[in-house]
Length: 526
Image 1 (cartoon, helix red, strand yellow):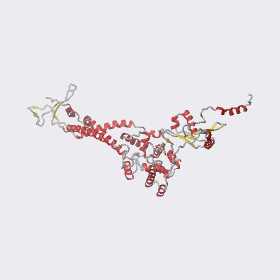
Image 2 (tube, rainbow, N blue to C red; image 1 turned 180 degrees about the vertical axis):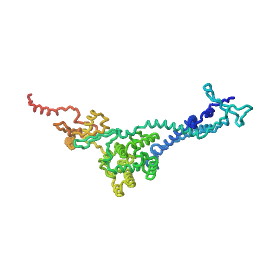
Image 3 (spheres, rainbow, N blue to C red; image 1 turned 45 degrees about the horizontal axis):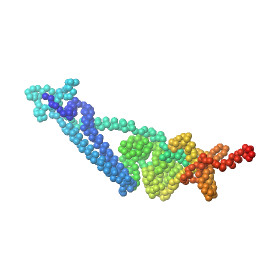
Image 4 (tube, rainbow, N blue to C red; image 1 turned 45 degrees about the vertical axis):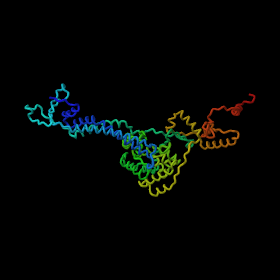
């Protein structure tokens, strides 16, 4: 007589058809996901969110992490508690499903008789299960046995094999889509970084730089002094030439050790990781972004040499304000090219990228001086400089040029800019890295500005407060000087260019017109 089974029993007895270990593994992988797969995935997602909240809470602590949380307040703690409650609910669901699987694995039929179905008339196996504990011999109840007994067992190794198959399938599938979504690291070398456009006078003197958000001028690594690259490696990634792009354990240990022992700010990412993060990835702090960063760093190390990566990093990294890249940083803080910097100056700039605002020599000179000396100390410890060089550089006082508006001949500069935008467009002017040499003579320009100021001072009692001067070369039409007002930065009309404005000349035009008429032979009687 056939016994009616529950739906769950078919999972148990269906193993009778599975003989090879490989197929048993597939069977248990399906069983695994039916019962507990979704709970484990959800459990891990909640766990990761909880860890991320804790990390954000720790990251919210400023450089003086012993005193107070910055900005986050109790928000991070509240979110962490909420995630913890969600995780507990998830754990309870997971435990219930694990008990279900455990009971399934413990189930063992004693000996059952199997009658194979006649396909396709019957789609489910017809099973006869004797009473548990009753002896079944060669002859039961006076008649011969019709079917050979089959014992159903569920070894734990098959269950583990099923888990392995299931996780392997998920890993391959998700890994494929994850790798497919990554940007190509070959783009690092061809990324169109916004480059500043430079405007020069006729002798090559810089008048102004046009840029949108990032003031950047690329420079070759071979043009820089060797101690500049050494300072960057010493403070950012001392194992740079020894790792393959990622230093998970040593990088984290080094960062934690420095942050605790020295009280400074130290990151765990390598120079390669920082480069791919700034060039190819978005800046949010998530686990997914970090995994992408690691994969791309390993990939980039196979495409570029160490010197190429270091050069791209020095031209990409932010040094504070609108200064991006080592060349613009040298101009901003020291008023010179990067190739002309001294050891102490190079050490100061090498310490800025981790926290440009915190170590700014303009806003926090004490922290900047401490950071510079810390870079020099690391350079000495790692063998880049001698003790004499270190001591000599440490004694040099912090000296940076004051922040200033570097524009010269502003009316002329923006007159040229308007013509460039008409010809090439705003984007090309602000990000295209143009190098424009003009006809202006900066010496004549400065003299014209001086003359205008003197002449206005003579007639200020007549309520004359503004004026302009335009000096040209008649034979070619070249503009040698253009002073559009007494002070470009004064309000309300300082930026107004008197020399290009369309104004009614009035009677002031008569002497010019009369002189031209007399030259042509006209007389008063004409």
